Every structure is written in structure tokens, then in C-alpha cells.
Length: 252
Image (cartoon, rainbow, N blue to C red):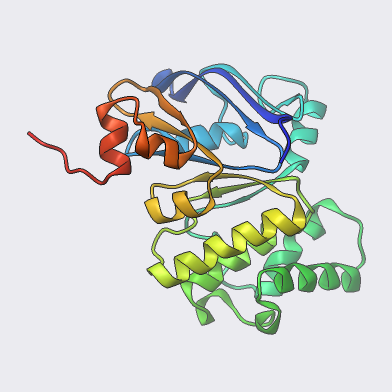
């Protein structure tokens, strides 16, 4: 990991229809790190992620990926930014009528001129990276939830992105499957030199994979902590951070 910042989020107000959920959010993501966005339900984690990947523009502020604005710039700028990352969603968002191989081929069909056999070869390689090559001809309904998450990661890797955004990758998984997914993320970071931005509230995963994290707060609508998970647990800057990292229940 280097100190080079590849994602800049600067003074962003996040929300919809002029209704802010987060105010004046600023942080950077360094090349090669696993950066986690965490916080309680309704604090704006997924909304911030949607702004970062360009699904919706922020209400204010700027988000740049490798210097290119994801919103508010030229179409050329946006296109360059979009090609630098892949995304997986909480549900996996695989097409149920397609095999895993066909799902992974979709980005290759849309954004490359590779012939059919070459697309299949690349897709098989991506499935092998996540341990699913033997299941290339299976449909999403025929495999487990954890395998569907892995297949979604393989599809996100199809165009060799520098950055992967993962939205709640461990949601709905049992502890053993979740730990296997954490190990996959660590292996991909080490072998493929990928920068990860992950939205999660799963403490076990946060401590297993995160280099740094930010914690969002619903009442204040701001970032209330930033740093290494162990540091935030041992030296929380406020009661809300202490409660989150130590699993303390709310008190009336």
C-alpha cells in the first residue's frame, strides 16, 4: 500500500431531492488499501456509496477517482472514472436466467471488442480467481448465497478494475461463509493489487479486512471517526464510536 490517494471525497453533502443525509463529508482512499465505510442503520452508508460510484450526484461537493470527477464533469471524465472500478451490490444482482459464465461475460460484451471465445476465457479466469470455475455453467439459483457473492465479485473483476466497491458483502451470510469471503478479499488485494471500498457494519469483517475506516453518524449527519479499527476501539473519540466498536446497547 502507498500513501497515494486515488479517491478524493471533498465537502460532499449526500442525499436525495435536496434532502441531505450527510453533511460536509471529506476523506481520501489510498491506493492498495481496504477502506471501510461503517455506521448504524440509516446513517447514509449506501447513499454515500451510490454517490461515489456515480449512480446519483451528490447535493454538494466533489468526488474524484484518479483525478477524474465521477459527477459534474465532462462525459469523457466520467467515462474514465467509471472504467477504473467494479461494483458488487448487497444482493449480488446476478441475472437469474444466465449462467455464472454468462453473467461474468456481460461487462466484456458491453465494453470490449473481444470475440466470443476470448470473452469466455477471461470469464473463466475471473471465476477461477474466486474459486468458482467448476460452477461456470450453474445458474445463480443453483448455488449458495456465499457463492453468489463470489460470482458477483468475479463479474466486477471482468474489466480488470483498479478499485472494487462492495456494498454489504457479508449480509445474509453465516459466520464461516463470511470469514471465507473476508479471506478472498484479502487474497485479491494481495495478488491483484486492488483497492477496496467496502460498506459494512459487520464487526468481525471490519477487524479482519480493514486498513482504515470512517464511521458515519445519523444524528449529526457527519463523519464522527476515522482511523484503524483497533485504534477506534481502544481510543474511541466519542460515546457513539465506543458503543459501536464494543457492541454496547443503547440506553434510554
